[in-house]
Amino acid sequence: MLLNFNWNVLMSYRHKKLKEEDVAVCECKYGVNDPETACGERCLNELTNTECTLGYCQSGENCRNQRFQKCEYAKINLFRTKGRGWGILDDDNIKVILLKQL
Picture 1 (cartoon, one colour):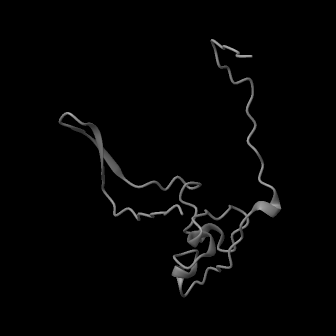
Picture 2: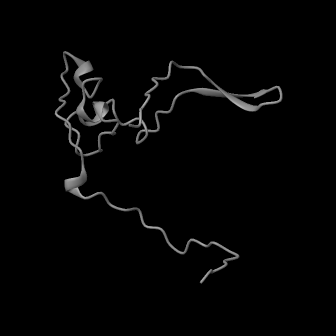
């Protein structure tokens, strides 16, 4: 039996609350003498491409692994190309992560 719909209306949306056992908590701690310890390149969540969760990260407000939650996006410029549509040019050095699917 094939159903054909002419509309798609979202009736309600509730943000799914994260369960406490699903939160990935890192081992990083912010040190006043060494601010680089606050969730940097050696953070467990950073290594697994997961953002630290607000309220669970031991670095607190100093956590550097909450870029999307804090709206810290890369600075980019859109430009029109000849015959190819739109392009993106970065103003910052964007860290590129390549994932290989096996």
